[in-house]
Picture 1: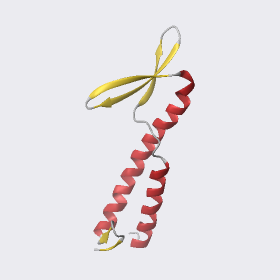
Picture 2: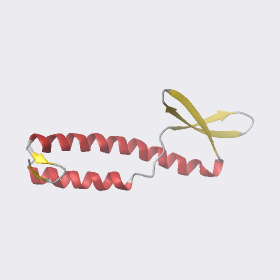
Picture 3: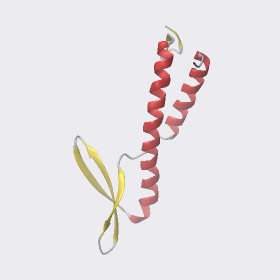
Picture 4: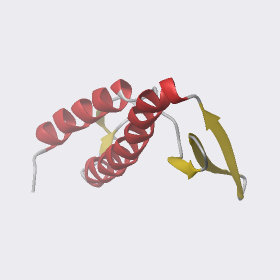
Length: 99
C-alpha cells in the first residue's frame, strides 16, 4: 500500500490534471449522411436527448473538448479512489493534515 505522502502527491497531481481539462463539452459528435456533411453534438440533459448543430470549422475543437470530458471522468474516478485511501488513513483532505 502507498504511503500517505505518496497518496498526497498523487492527489495533487490529479487535481492539477483535472484543472487542466476543465474546458470540455459533454456529449458525442455525430454526422448525418445527407446531401452534404453535417455534424451534431448529442448529449442528455435531464433525461432528454439534446442535439446541437456544429459548424464544420468547429468540428475538430468540439471533438477535442468531448475527448477532454471522457478524460476528466477517468481522472475524477482516480481522484475519488485516492481520496478514499487518504480518508481511510485518517487524513483530513480539507486541511491536508490528520483528522
